[in-house]
Length: 245
Length: 245
Picture 1 (cartoon, helix red, strand yellow):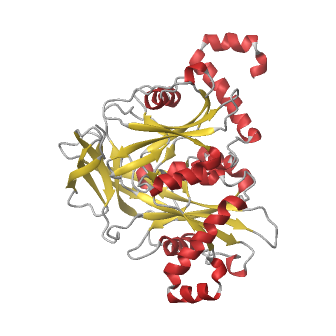
Picture 2 (cartoon, one colour):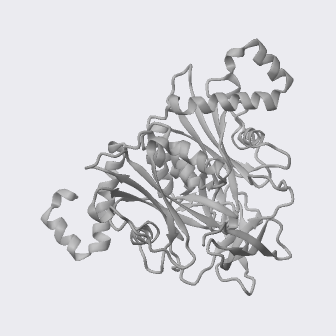
Picture 3 (cartoon, rainbow over the protein chains, first blue to last red):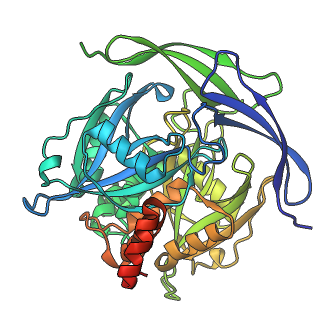
């Protein structure tokens, strides 16, 4: 009979020279009542607020130019991420300090990482798990509007923390997909939250895909799959229906 | 002088009774040439393909009904995630088995977790890091179209692995945000990739927000922030401008 699954106990493993991360071996009861084990990782840094819903915030910042009428842009950053051993394109982000609200953390990180001092908060999402099969890490997205024509936002000067080396990108919405693929071509990785947001933006709210944006991709990948997956059959297929190319 | 940052060495910590996860203490050189340390977690399961670009796949599956003309739906699943100690709403997902392509893994997981046996692959994304400050975990998204009117897709029967207890949701695009908030209200968490995709879908490809979708949220959050952040001042404000309520 189905019951509510839940964690009943856990053991923590933290190497003596670790400060930020630890492993836990969970014992949980599944919906059938059976006891099982699960391995996870978690952040363990000292200034994490006890019981806080989120570890950090993602700042989804859009820059609008009401006066100069430049096209709207998405604000992204690039930084070297040791776990990936490469540069990663991400939303402005950061851990929430003890006692901070996500909104305050977002505006603080925005200022530190990009130099934009004036942003208006449009909304805050619920806490969202980032990799729920592996960790309890979760963030809130804070949606921020930046007036790029405002005098205080004209020449933003970042003030990163020691050890942070950040490159700021302002990418026009109209060329997001193209620019992200170019950055991948240069050896960067693009964070899943950024790609999911961009792919989502290619769907209209009504759930129809935007045919012009996906069309090129669809044909390219179909052809690729046909070649790889069907082998000779694919060659025959293409011979008989050259219009597929 | 700026140089390319890179990891130069690492130490691995794996508790004796752990099979799936381990910690690593990285030593890396940053762009200024300074040597630094970074703590990370990683998956270490035996069947992970050596040097494989991705740990797993997310299946972004949309169901269309060309004959019955029902509104298009997004396919989502719910399962208990021990690291979060709650049910999490996610895309269909799974680890890539040794030697599998992301496409094959996606269709296998789609069949196992939801019972849909026929899907056409529209595209595959680049590998995307999931939490690059904490781990090297990364996935590819596989975009799949499902014909919900196809005879083989009419009554899908899932065949989950032992220990997998999955609930399948088909959510019309038009009510995604509402339904996800309802599920959160019932105690579920919604994975960041799902939320980022849904929030992205509220932006048009041109980068303009859809005013009708965000408007309600904006007012609600402004009121909330006023209450929390401004305290008594907020009470005065609301007294003077009851129309805000």
